[in-house]
Length: 448
Image 1 (tube, rainbow, N blue to C red):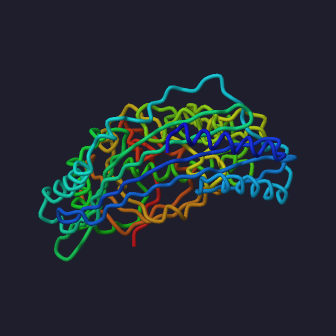
Image 2: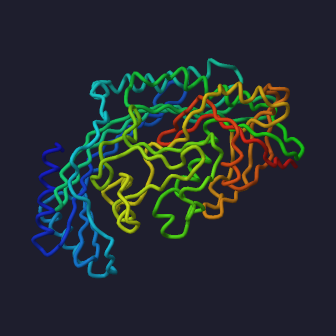
Image 3: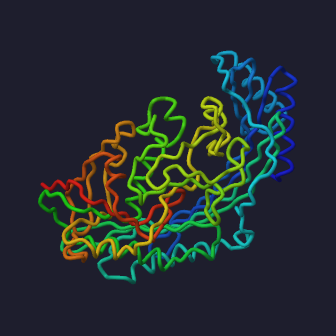
């Protein structure tokens, strides 16, 4: 469907809602398609093309919000969707902070679509997935099983029109490759993975993806537990990003206002080491979650949340901003026409430091380099307490030595933030979140 056709449908829905008594109304249209290709042993195992298209209508009547959506874009279905939203509004409680944003003076110029992706053939995409598998196998004969070698891409158009003057659309596309595999030796097996996503097909390096996944699995062969101890701990970028992902919801104004954030009431206070700066940047160049506007049509922004260890603020959408007497940061998160905007992150990351990763490791006499954690979802986002299984490599006299598995790390997220005494220069993104290598001065490592 063309952007103009979706815009016309969205405009008519807003007009219908207003004509039927809505005080405010908004139509959110999404037209998306996703291709996924999995290969195994040099042949295509699965290839799927999925399309998702529809419109959601959000409206307000006497301070009450109603919402409904449809993937049937016929005139009759659109009218029925507006009627359902009006009916739903009658059952909701009145909330004076509910509303819609007005038209912005300007939106950031963000590149979200590379037209060259549209001319890449399916055959080329299949070859990329095959190249990932081949590169992994070529690393070492101990790579026995390629669980997954895949290529995916997504193209989408988002359209938002509301009764306050917002009338915006954005076309975007991104692609990526992924590998997940198993290395085996003497009856033991270890897994490894790697991924790379970006706006450009040419930006994906299949050899690097395959090689990195293989090397991750191989370096863990022969892993054994170590005795319990307290020692410096270095987190590789992927694991550091997992910790950051647990912190992310607590930095939203929604969590603060609901009393579900460990950062509530701490604005302006030091909560992390001075080396720590955390940013959410919805207009970051070259990132796949960048966009000129959020899920409500508010311009995206660069928001510093933790500034050199001090809590600088929270992420807002229109509702939480109205409730706090603040301004939306452009973080009205909305992944589909099937839901209303929440508060979410865009490109959320811990800013890189000046130290090379090897430097952070080289300064440690005896410590632990963490490459994997298990059970991170069990961390308590309100208290900050966590206890997770961990695997990685022992650090001895400034060098990575033998692989370690079967140990646990326990602590508190605030203590973890405050204990960071080294930040690497290797900021690495994993889809929408990123972190460099991080070093924590001391943590409890529990062995068997």
